[in-house]
Image 1 (cartoon, one colour):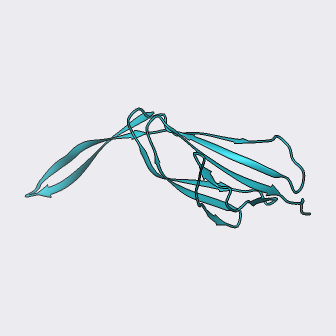
Image 2 (spheres, helix red, strand yellow):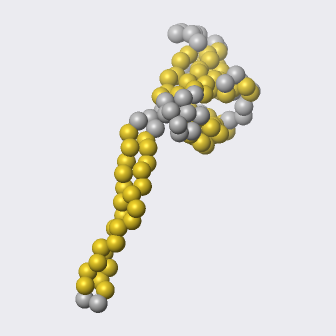
Image 3 (cartoon, one colour):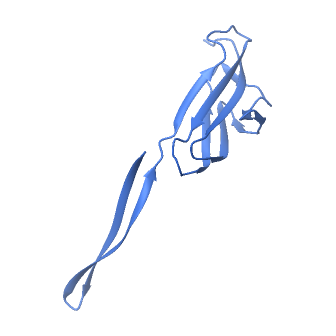
Length: 127
């Protein structure tokens, strides 16, 4: 984790005198989420089903992450299996548009991992 300190200032001309006014300093912590994607099988055949899982870990000790947008773009040969999407083993409903899958993760608590899994079927190779 890293931190950013930031202070604003404003230069103002008052009665032929230049005055600089500074704000308070704001600290912003940068939480570097850890993301690991796995697949249940290293190979398959056309018509086969694969299960992808993405583990998203919040390594912070005290900062919860809210409303994180998960996004996965599927290869053109892959088709999302409707109803297969889970978050920590519980059914959830993503937004699916073409080859794009999105889901807003309501919260990733500090020190916790959220695991998103879904199935795809493998179609034929196109020329």
